Image (cartoon, rainbow, N blue to C red; front, side):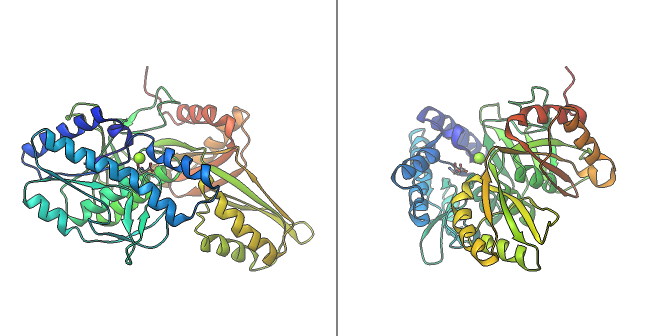
Length: 403
Ligand code: ASP
Ligand code: MG
């Protein structure tokens, strides 16, 4: 059972989570809880670091951020003990979550959950800090924002849990962000593939890596609300099966957390793109969409999008790349948004892309970059048109709940 930051935001909520865990343990289940930092603690820690330096050492930043979850696990264990049940907390490192050495977005390479199984056998509720691990030589790492979801899925796989329940302040996955689209509908079942596309295109409920992990290790994820009663249905993320409706479009997602980089005056010869993206890759920048314009007099422009959080790494990488390829200038545009439509049925239905473009055109929304996968179409548009675009697409693809 994984509880996100809002679910453990203060001591009163911690007590409620504790009660919920005890209730489950008393029903006969072995219970492992994975928790996030309380409320906005991770954001606050990042702000504090930024007040000291604009580009903190990545090792020290992970050292700092991992403390957020450590506070939660200790307090939650105390809350459970205070309510008369046995509990023990572990950090990611203690629980044997071994990662690679890429600070701030480390990947889990191994889990040795022996201490979890031992504590469960002693009938204790086990509390594990989300979002963190350690390298083979003992350095503290974090798994990227939202990484507690990944901890939960990885642990569930590691101990062969029957279920992996992800509790947050929303009661499931919606066909669009309900704060923007009042007629958004809750989705009961969604496949790993669709969920991966939704998570990578902005659906905030689950971290993308956690879904990847779930698919690779066949862990069924159950997204539920920590504030609703325990019989509330939520959303189940699982492999494709017959009782899933094959909707042409299941969801409209958006992401305003990316920035667009344009490199101008790039010599149009083989190997240039390889050089640029190789250097970005070496700096661990996750490039999303790419567009290269037709060349004019042997020079071309390349635009691509990256997470805003990666902008520091992009700058240093591009300084190197620009010299190597002899390009003219580059600039960043942060006022962009990505809107996407996702649906497994898209594979077999022609005309979906055209309908998306037409819908945006009718609203006078200009499309800057386009990218597609077999089950997703994404467009980069101006940030201030995001909400209008999402609402129009939700209506156009007949996702609105009947009033
Ligand atoms: N506390 C971390 C974050 O805010 C990890 C998580 O909550 O999943 O990103
Ligand atoms: Mg989260």
